[in-house]
Each structure stands twice: as structure tokens, then as C-alpha cells.
Image 1 (tube, helix red, strand yellow):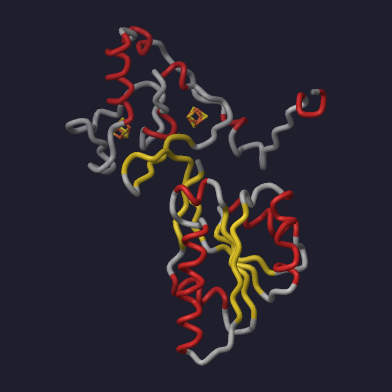
Image 2: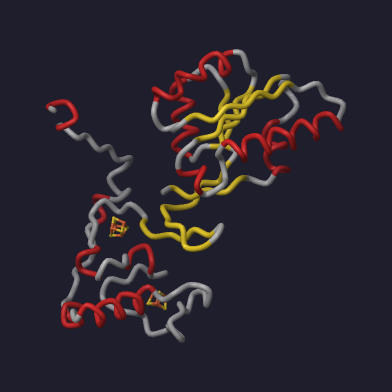
Length: 224
Ligand code: SF4
Ligand code: SF4
């Protein structure tokens, strides 16, 4: 899932500025709900905080809220057309994709980001998410025992560790597991250590961002 965190309230207030009377906060019911950054609960909490702030400032600001299933699908953005059209500012608590999709769907409205979108990650503890994939567009997990060296080695090394690992932790940050130690341990466990001896040529990054913004078209969608 896409992992994000809410911007600081001071940053949000500064971003909203002074030139508005109505605000619509829109959450997203999918990834950012799981990472507790932009779901229904966070939308309501932020709205309450902002109401309190503006009332202390003696400003009469009307705040409405809603949480759609997914901000990255137009069909769910249609549901909030009335609120968006009657509001001065829209604050999205979706990921960066959701914010931009809202801006595409409502080109005449100001859409602002309430979250900082961080990475593609998995839940690794209570209230904890960790990066697992950078969306390189050419998955090589088959060659690395299901552990991604691109996302989980701090240096993105494809041909073995850098040699700086200490007690299974990365030299870049002792809080991070060494991605290559994870790969090695999995290889031992699976009896496939020999497979790591092969040379992996430099990765072809054309499937990543180097070719510009990417698009995926699934023709079965139309044929089926
Ligand atoms: S190899 Fe690429 S697609 Fe596969 S997990 Fe790593 S970053 Fe993601
Ligand atoms: S210590 Fe491990 S994870 Fe960190 S950069 Fe070196 S090989 Fe990669």
C-alpha cells in the first residue's frame, strides 16, 4: 500500500492561508486509512482541530468533511461534486495521486495536499509501516529470494552487500535491517545460496522514471 503521514497542523494552516471562508476536507478510504493518515477518523480529527483554531482566531470558517473510497478513481470523486463545487478550498487527505486526481476532476477548484506521501510499504508493527518496493517497473524479486535489493538495501546494490553491515543492521542507519543480510538468510533457508553467486548486470531503469511518467494499459480490460 501507499504509506503517507499527515503534514504538521502548522504547515496545513499556513498552506490554507487567509483568503477563504469554506473548507472541504476529503479523506481516502484505502491505503492512507490503513496508515492512519487520511481516513475518516483523521479527517474528523483534523476538522475539529481546525474548527478550534479558527474559532480561537475569531474567524468564521465553515468546514465540511467526507471520506471517499478511493481518491484515485473518478467514480468515487463524482460523489463529492456538490461539496467541492460550493467550497473555496479543498484539502485532500489522500496520497499525492489522490490530490492530483481531484485536481484533474475539478480543474476550477483549489486542491491542497494534507499529507506527505512516503513510500510503498507493509505493516511491520502496531502503527509502523516499512518500505518494500519503489515501483521500479521490472521486478527482480525472483532473483533475490523475495527480498528487494532495490528498495531494502540502502544503496540499492544488486551484487551483494557493501561490507558495512553490523549485526544484521545497515551501516547507513542501525535501525534498518541490512537488506543483503535478509537476502542471504533467506537464500540459506531455501537452500539456494549458490544462486546468489551469479553476476547481475546493471539494472535497466527504462521501466522506472527515466522514460518520464508511466502509464499501464491492460487490454483485457476492454476485450473481456
Ligand atoms: S524489484 Fe522493483 S518492482 Fe520488485 S519489489 Fe523491488 S522495486 Fe518493487
Ligand atoms: S549495510 Fe546492507 S543494506 Fe546497508 S547499504 Fe550495505 S549492503 Fe545495503
